[in-house]
Length: 116
Image 1 (cartoon, rainbow, N blue to C red):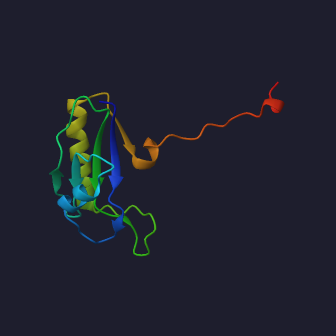
Image 2 (tube, rainbow, N blue to C red):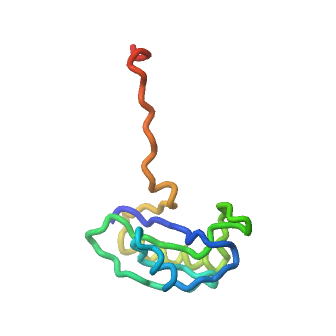
């Protein structure tokens, strides 16, 4: 196990959707845990020790206009801290990443003419 990756559900601030709805809509990601706006942690898929990542999703992530924003409530932050501590106790070397941190970064390619 290498990473805990934190995702948002990309829903508008204050809109509470169920863990079941997020899980059904997330066919491209295998979320293990979903954190509701009230701080409830719902386990929706078991952790497979063969996977590299544990995927956690919190409800929210967009402001009222649909722009990216950290909308985590205090309850969600507390629940996320608790969950991360539990997972780190089971997997001491695991890193915590936010969704953007987990995406491959483009590498700068040198122009052959400029190389010396």
